[in-house]
Image 1: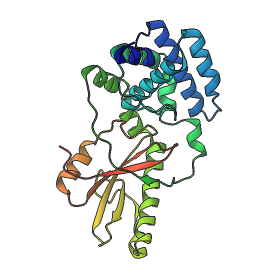
Image 2: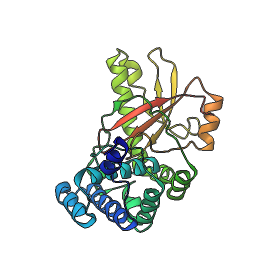
Image 3: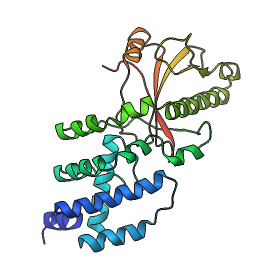
Length: 264
């Protein structure tokens, strides 16, 4: 057996449409349970998929990784394991699209799941590096636009407020830890009197102001997001002060990364 054929056997590229529907449907069923705060018996789910599709464990795990990659790029949360596998193909994109269209409630739960209400008012965040850009094709771009998770998240006041509160708490800790409790006491959520578009007011260690824009998702670091026109205008007008904080995986590892202008 050649290396190429061994690889094909390992990842199970020869999945029929019905088999893809089974593995994608099962993955989303597990995700629904996770977002509802219910226990998920991964072993039972995997045994069922293997039995129905006739696939062994390695191809099933590989396909689940591809599903995680597609959902991550669309902007949905994913199961903890297996990690995303960025080698998905067009048939899988179609299977994911079909399955998501049949589960509109999942799209809502992916923004405000029942499990979110057990979260504290502000979640301790871990800083991470920004992700590297990933290749984008027209079909994937269409799926991202069709389900538009970024707009759903931006319009959800609870999710947005939780992200802002978490960043404010992080900024207070950062300044306090660096010996600036005076500045930490001035960090706050933005009000109507502040520049339009910003979500929070903070400071550098040298007391320079920071106009923070916070984008929050339950999905991973590659989930798409956008800036409003007011935020773009603010970034152009105040690039010295404008700072973006992307909060992600809010119910998992709860991380964020930093970006600053220019964004165009």
